[in-house]
Image (cartoon, rainbow, N blue to C red; front, side, top):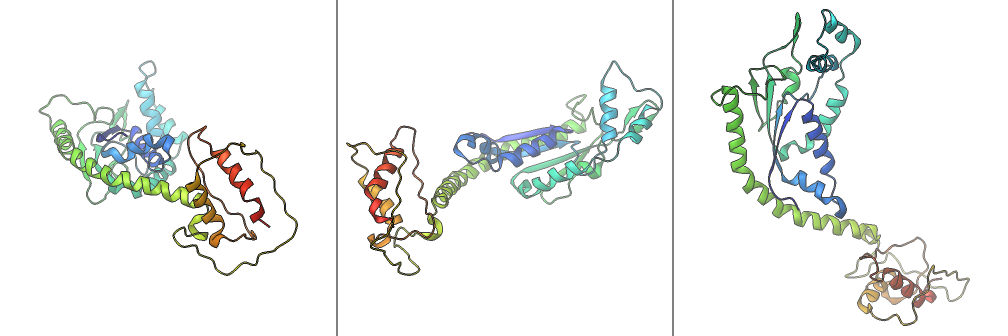
Length: 296
């Protein structure tokens, strides 16, 4: 498991990808993908530089992409074409922010916005304005960066106020993260084990129908002494099969409370799991063979 603290530094649309990855990893608790869940548990802080969380104008991004292409500089009047060709494309960003909202309390967050507009020939505009770059939430930090969107993560010197603001936040986060993430993992591991145990319990159909400590029955079920029987096992158990007595008894107690044969009104399930080749199929075939007369 990845137990080292993680601090994300995101610029622009990269912050949207980080939010989507944390939304996804929050639910990845299965054994084969738990390394993704580790990222969610170990993430301590996120620094967002000009990330759109609400309203985002697609034309601004198109214009910025055009400007960044050194082989194609914007021509006079082209910015107006960008603005008229597209409309606000904020639905996706708001949807991601809505899904991310329940997870926000898990992380320290610092929101930075650009204070200088980006120049496009004779036209200037902010790529992500303050209202979109900042979420006004409790226990979060926010500050303006005196730079354009492209330049807000580039610092002229260590003496600049922008640089000192960012470094001060990172220093605090790095100081606090190890202690908090270590404590978080002491709670996360037992919670994960309990979650998996509960999933296996419910998959077996035992959560509501069977109490292993003391078998529970709503009423006494009549036993039919005779009648048609249907029995088919996909695979015969080996003739020399031995062992697993304790496990056999556990399954018997689950399927046959009080040791009586029953009339099945609905299917019951019992999950048998283990490594490949450990004998799961043989165990189930043997149990079916030995108890075929108990079903009517």
